[in-house]
Length: 256
DNA sequence: TAGGCCATCTGGTCCT
DNA sequence: AGGACCAGATGGCCTA
Image (cartoon, rainbow, N blue to C red):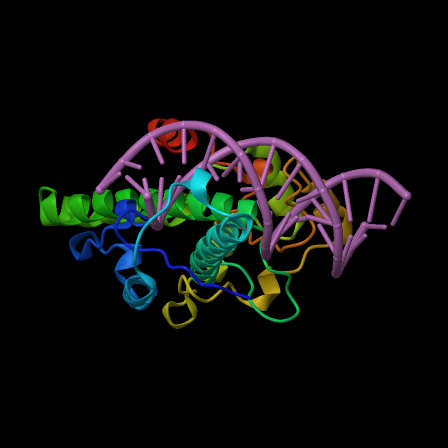
């Protein structure tokens, strides 16, 4: 039944995902390579199929009912494959997002995944900027003693500020959980236990009491079905970063 | 049972 | 012309 017509990489969803290793592109990894490889194989296989079947082409008005149905099935199959590829990419995105994976945790919805990813990127960008400033202060500063004291104060400041400003309500909500995002960063600071992007924060940070979870429900229906990580990017509207210098990015990314 | 999420089908539009 | 992309419609599944 599945007359699997192919898609190609020529104009697919990929043009914007051009591999750029210099930028440490997310899609420079195996997921994207596998994606293109599969598409290439698929298109080659399909090309062979069409060449074998080759011959004269009819305009759509000349097609018989059966041929129209055949065409329809082909188009449907392509669309199905396209959506499967899209979902595969979405799964790839979920894999690298900082939230609890596992059989006991429900999969993030698509919209949640996208919003979480956006926040995650913003948070990483913000952290990177802070680190750049830090390095600049430490290595580019004046006298050694001065820089030492400056660095000390800067580091202690940065240690508490390397996160996006949260909605005040979100901060208070997070504090309800037992610790603020800032405090949590201290908790999770041991180098050996610092959570990698692929590994969510330790389980002790994952639990929410039911009332708080209820409070975190939002118009986008993002609450409840997944877990909030204090100090980590979160797709719910309460945890959206306040408008900052990234507002330009925001408007760019959200406008179509 | 209502609402959310998803997969699929379908027709239209744009691009190569 | 063919394929990719998009959005609307529809129906199924799941959860509160």
